[in-house]
Length: 375
Image (cartoon, rainbow, N blue to C red):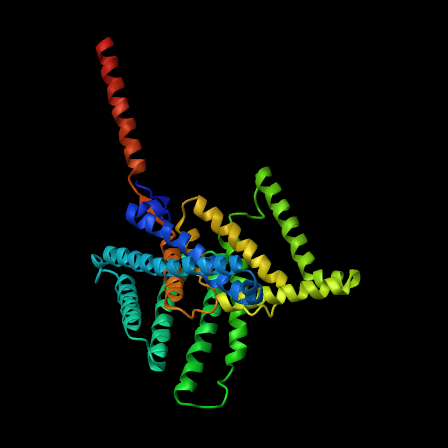
């Protein structure tokens, strides 16, 4: 009787999709990181240090040059995103009509790209912004449904649900506020500020859960080296977390003037990240640091392994919480697309026992012939 053997083969490596797609993604993540640092963060830091920049010409020229480089990288990121989406859509055109998911995701992503190009040529009005946000929600729902269908681990599903709740919190805030502004309603939209803060909390939680989903460290390991790494990582992270959580309290006991200066510096950092990424830092600062630490470790590890998940997680969280620019929205969509592509494929090999049986039969025939010759 033939029995089935189930094998699992990974399909989530970046080098399995061609050299052009591989190097496009690598350049995209690298450019997006420098665009985040140089344009969305450093340029805001220059605004925060405007008095110092006005006093020293060298500092003003430095921030001006870094901001110019960051703005150039913004255009580079946009072009690389369009190239990456084009490569993906070209590979999916041959499967149109065969699978419902391929047809739907191709149609929705194509519509989102067409709207992006149209709004780059003609700036959108309020109705155009609402339509763009609605199409973005549809694309995210399609990709998230495929991700939840193909990824059955609880950690990955929990991370994805939290991330979607975070993104939808911002999209609800942006869409409903624009809708009320279009009709010139002076009343506050229902639950707009509450859902905006809830979305930010979900984004921070998703960045922490990314370590649980893709960090590769488990509590049930029998490897001593991995166990030592887990203990070291847990103790270090817990020490940093509680240290930052009670930093203001301990500094207040030691020196109130020092505590006040550290508090003002923290407010300045919060202002920079709020202008650049949309985080208001209303949660304890230790949670944001924990999310950054867990996300950074996970992305570096996954990218070093050549996994698409590392590049996807990098783009999703580097886009930030406030998706005020179109290339940030495309970064989230493409990052989620890479996560859906990072999965394991099941292969069923049903003829393995039969081949072994034939091999044994061939060996027995050869042995019988040799015995006959001796006799």
